[in-house]
Image (tube, rainbow, N blue to C red):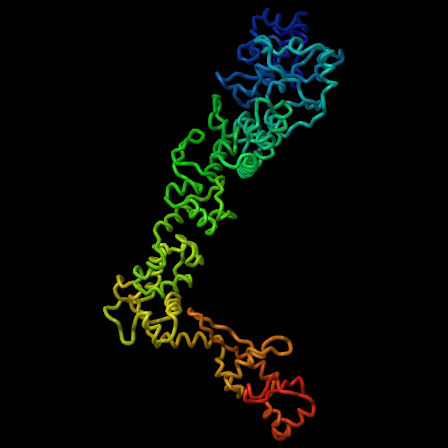
Length: 612
């Protein structure tokens, strides 16, 4: 039998509130008494049980699904649901009283939709809903005074109208947080895409609030002392980061860590992330934190030094991703100051101070361990000759030229251990040095080792080594590998030809320029060193420096052409004007025109055509 007239629940009204209005409306008695009379328990109403829903549907004519949508449905010991959205026990405030004083005052107006009865809104039951969307003020929220207040009859749990008026007068306007809007969208059935929507609503909310609390108030804030307004602010800020996804969350985590280091420079993940770390590491609730745990865990492992075997957020760290100077020093046995200097010099610690160890800085473990291994398996320069089978001078030249690289390239001999050359580097050099050769049982005609070839071809050893490494020589023989440096044989005649060809490609020699211009070779040197009126040399040259520091100069053909076009010798001018050189010289003197440099420097008098 359906009770008439039908009294449907109002939009947004809770099941408890609706039952509290049904009693006075149909029987003139209070809601709890009406339920007792109909043998419907308050608990079944609070939990929107099937028995309760079916009984109310029979009595009121309201469809079961409509009734179910007005309540929080219990789905298990720790699981609840509202409008098909699941969450844990802490998300719905069963032990708290929550209301908007302005809404309750408006309800008491006889002309209101509730005909003067206070209405409890279902949204007030959810922890992230802290602002009234109608009046834009913070909800009043307090712990229940007794177990009976879990049945949120607003006529009993909320104060008198006079007190409600006082609460409204002292309330300040505030916007609805983005997190609250998100919660409302999910309950209304809107399908938001993105990282948050792929997890349970209470997991998403908790992640936003914890992230936001650490961003706004610091990682080590006392969470128990945050007000409802502060939690509301934290949730909104956290939502702005978390809703974008893991990459933005990781950026937020870095902001939190930077702020923490300003207060305390040392420490591990707990020092950097404080309450967020403690929540995930020492989770005392039965509710899983959700995907935020893996995001924070991965960020910590990617940015901080964590020892293998450490239990981090419920899982054991199998492999180290980051080292600190101290941890790598312990593992490698290298002095921390030496290690720090090497890490900074090699750019593994970006922007670090090589003279000061920063305990808060970590770096890529693999890169650090590779460097440490190179340091531990290295030789001082004085030991290289025995390893390579060369002399000390050659070892120093190979190192100085960077053909074999020191632990810290370019550090010279003054860097202590860091001046050493890794054995792996010497082995690499030998492999590449022999790579272009052909095995031979004994030296072919004219073939000799690089050291001897240097003397015969009058080229530095290092320059010949470069020709071998760069594949510039076509004839290379290889003797037994245990001869190491001396196992590579080259042809001195081919070296001379290759060097001459390479230098020839860069231009003419001084002798060739002198022959073309009809001057002394020393005159070419004078033109190269003497500036013209524009401040540039009369003839520019390309400088060639070999491994010993000896310098040669080559002159581009185009540069010599330019000089010849702009200048002329006295004999050339005389022939052009059909006079003798002596007569031409007299004319030029009378005109005040002088040679570009004194004749004895060049063995010729040369003039600028532009002066004529």
